[in-house]
Amino acid sequence: MKAMLLRELAGPQAIERAELPDPAGEGVLIEVRAAGICYPDLLVTHGRYQVQMQPPFVPGSEVSGVVLTAPDDSGFRPGERVSAMTNQGGYAERVLVPPAVVRKLPRSLDFADGAALLANHHTAHFALYRRAGLVAGETVLVLGAAGGVGSAAIQVAKALGARVLAGVRRSGHDEFLRGLGADEVTALGEGWRERVGELTGRGVDIVVDPVGGEVFDDAVRVLAPEGRLLVLGFAGGAIPRIKVNRLLLRNVSIVGAGWGEFLRTHPEALAETAGALETLVDKGLRPPVTRRYPLEQASRALADLEEGRIVGKAVLTV
Image (tube, rainbow, N blue to C red; front, side, top):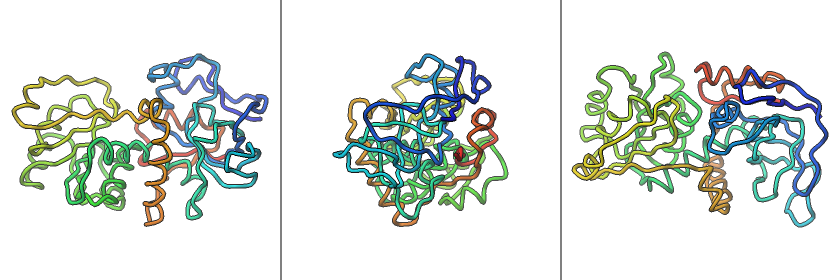
């Protein structure tokens, strides 16, 4: 089969096309039609993700496609349209995965949508619903709102009944963000904290922060009493630090939201979260697929992600 192989931990440029044997073993064998481009896959190519893999290997952690073979007791049959989270291996024509990570693809989603609904939207729903306990009517500020996790967080927060503020550094995307469900868009430049205060009058109930870095301190300051700041990652580079007396004096919380790590100890949560998202899909949610690359351009797609050239979600088509 055709696959995109990472030869060394040197970033996206170390990915090259290869011909590999079909995966063998127990599990559901999927003919891949689309594979998601997500930030963890980029980190994997640099050897900076929390789960270390030794090259050579095929990256790619989210796919959709058609079942080729499946165990009799798996609940899946050849020809069914499915999506799956993978332990890498997704940037290939075929992938073998355990039945527990496979979901039947809703009829309303195409293969690109199916792959795009996985890592980012699962992370956003886990963070907002389970970790932050979002209640309808609360106000959510999403940092890095034009990115993959940010755009997913806007959609999920709005679908769960929140008022949503989108915080961005990139200009020119207001219409896109409002189309996702953002009620207000604010640039994360000078005076952005004051702008949030003007828009809310009291601060925000939840901040979704996949960025970290220099915006973190002001993100803590815009929390309303009993507000929660969700730490999803550090796309901005630096890992922030905080003096915990600020949490005590203002009765606010800093909440970690590591979806992948949670699944390692609570694998049943995958089906729970997937089911909740499928309910939102039935109500009209569609992931914002803005870029499609052929499989052979996996290296370019990840490089574009790294350089901030992708808004919303990108997928590889096979």
